[in-house]
Length: 412
Image 1: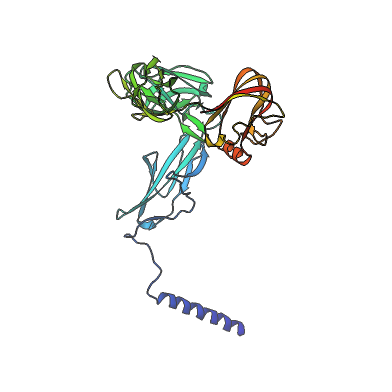
Image 2: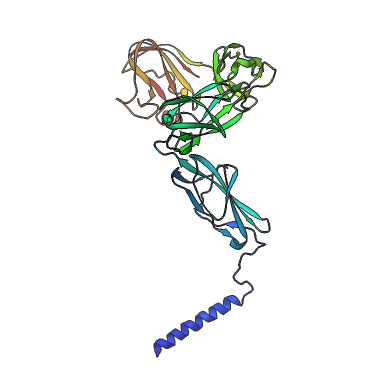
């Protein structure tokens, strides 16, 4: 009897609680047609610095499968855009993708036209036997024979530039050669191939832990392949690209940069005598049109100068390391600075921290990294952030070793 009484008591309390909740001003809300849509997934990672995060990595023989949870579910349509193209409509996608790193945008739209979206990437890696390339993009001109280096390229049976099939001139496991049509319009074209097993795959290039789609950029106009160059006053600089034989002139920092030599894919110019700093470089082709620097109308040249920090004559031995720049070097360097020690003699040595440790790893002897010195030589070191941290923590820098004379220390 007592047990029955307890059950009745619990039931009554529960009913009273439900009545209390429902008697308030707010009842349980249900999203309706006029409400803003929401994507409720907690398994979509947030991007950083404006860059979308990666949702998943799959092999190309596995489908991209994912479900979007939306509200109001009865009044929402979910659309999937991959690399800018709408490919599917529905809450759950389950489809194969070509190898590459794909940008995915999911848009949820209500019947009233209200929208919300999420963006992320999906990495699709090739199979071990799939063809891959050694670079992400190749620059070429219409009508030109182009050779693509990579792996498993003998597995290619058909070669497609966009939707256009090209004839394969020759192919091996490490390279394939095709001819671009003479009337090919300027542009950037993705490359897909049909393998000898009859599968259609995209050519891709490994970048870090993902694979990027390989493309061919075609142009009839001069195109410099990079927008950032380095130069020294009065010295020659070589730039790479296509159609560079049609470059008429270059201007660097407002001054003429004389062209020394030029060919289809390379051009050499002399850097004017400018102070250290960054300068814009521009150019004109034979028709007076501005040339392109990796898609921009100008490039940037970092002009550097080798500055002498110390000059004289100092005999380095195991007991007498050179400490002439020990306390001052850090005032002149940054990440990427090049420190040079001009030496002569018959011995061994290196630039080290004041604790006699390697400036890149912090390791000591026998892993300090001594160079063997014979005659006149230049010991050269490009500093990293680790180098700067080590030099700061270990009381500066020394040239250590034995059997040589140091005559000059410079930084660039």
